Amino acid sequence: MAADLVIAPSILSSDFSRLGEEIAAVDRAGADWIHLDVMDGHFVPNITFGPPIVAAVRGASKKFFDAHLMIEPADPYLEAFAKAGCDGITVHAEATRHLDRSLQAIRGLGCKAGVAINPATPETAIQYVLDRVDLVLVMTVNPGFGGQSFIRSTLEKIRRVRALIGDRPIRLQVDGGVAPDTIGEIVAAGADTFVAGSAVYKGGTEAAYRANMDALRASAKRG
Image 1 (cartoon, one colour):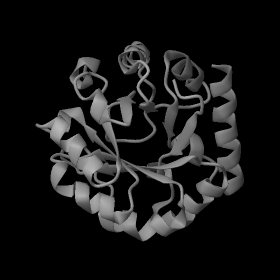
Image 2: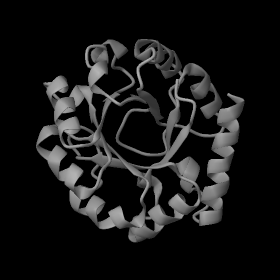
Image 3: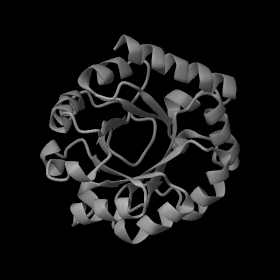
Image 4: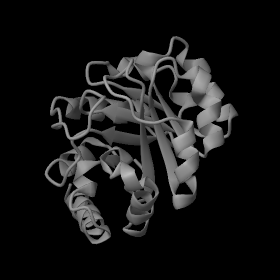
């Protein structure tokens, strides 16, 4: 397991009327990565933003831009997101017919490749592509909306994914319901990278964002 824990605030919970400022604020407040939740209204029941918005805010932070593509199909848009400035691109196992090919394409674009699985998807869906990925994302809520409650049954899946990863240099990311009262158990299950939206952005100020991330890190260390 990676020694360093990564906190990746999801901009889905930010104030979209001043998105660039919000990204800069969480960067200064101590974010390790910036998480970009891309939704298409087809694979998930919501629509967020595409490559032009990513390109527009890329200058707000030099941190790792972590794109989570909740779109189907994903392959036609990989190059556009890479050119917009994404450092890592994660696709859903459920949203692509040829997962191995998609992951190869992401790496071919010079980005870190990630694969995500929904709460009802077994970890066996990714076991044959682990040598193609830099990150596995376990969804701990059903994708499509922020602010949902953590699905506790996913803790066992996180443990199983950690076992599958073994000693490979792959980050294990969790997205959904990550908060000070859940992150300790998630760390104990084997995750090392955490997407948090409302748990980071509540309060609406840079000082609040810093305090919120400090609280997450303190709870993670106890886990």
